[in-house]
Length: 185
Image 1 (spheres, rainbow, N blue to C red):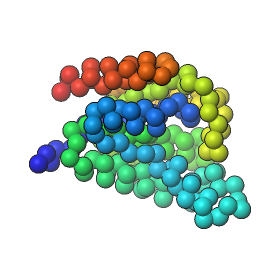
Image 2: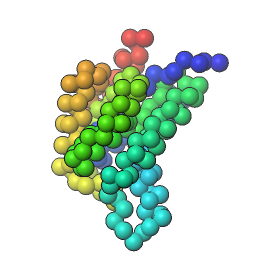
Image 3: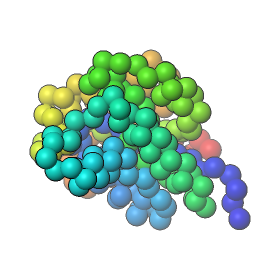
């Protein structure tokens, strides 16, 4: 049995950049696991409990649950017997979104980030057609977060490849990036 931690590829980008779709495609291609974005699950559950409020807004009181929920999903995935896994977003995204929307830095998020293992990032450009849903704000916000995430990755010297294009071209570029990166190991 393989007891080593898997290599972790975090798929990051702004809203409606195709993170979930690409995570699923890559996991299927590599016959491995992937984890969903916890905040989406959290907000869906929150809305199910109380449909009378605009519950797609994350409040300060939600952050601890979201942070530890995201962390639990990531850790559960890494305990599976896979050599490579994909994460549809990661705790870095949670930090950047809370910094922006709540204008507050949560020190426990920064402390948890130090313990996270993200080996490689696929940064998705905001070049797909915008798909509105009740948890997304706007194409402008998507582009803002793309730039914010890119700056974070660069400033923290984290390895990443930018992914762009439509349909199969986007998927094949991601596969090429992952395979090129894996050759380093």
